[in-house]
Image (cartoon, rainbow, N blue to C red; front, side, top):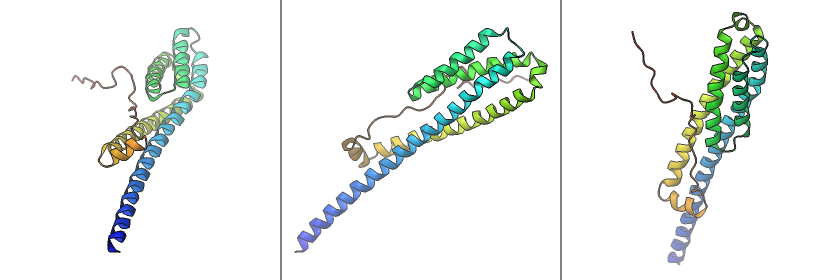
Length: 185
C-alpha cells in the first residue's frame, strides 16, 4: 500500500516539476515577445514623427533632396522590417539619416528656432530614449530566456515542448556604435 502511495507521490512530483518548468519557460518567452513589441511600438512612433520632421525641414531647405530621400528610404526600411535583425539594421539607417537631417537643420538658424521643429525634435529625443530603454529590456529578456531554456532540467523540457528556438539580440548597426569616442585635451 505504501509503495503505491510513494509511486503516485513521485509521479505527481515529477509531473508537477514538468508543469512548473513549462510555465516558467512560457513566462520567459511571453516576456521576451512583449519586450520585442515594446521596441516595435517605439520604432513605429519614431517612424510616424519622421514625415512631419522632413516636411518642416523641407520648408527651409528644399534643395537638400538627397538627405530627404535618405530619410524616406530609411523610414521605409524600418516600416517593412520583418525580423529583429532587419529592424536593427533599419534602425541604424534611420539614426544615420536623422543625423544628416539635423546636420542640415544646423545650417538654418530660422529653422532651429521654429516651434514646430523644436517640438518634433523634443518628441524624437524622448522617443530615442524610449527605444534605448526598450532595446535594453529586450536584450535582457533574450538573455533571461536563453538562460532559462539552457539550464538542466529545463533544457530537456524546452526540447520536448519546442522552446529551443534561439532569439536574436537587438544590436543597432549604426557606424561607430561600439566605438569609444576619443577625447583630446
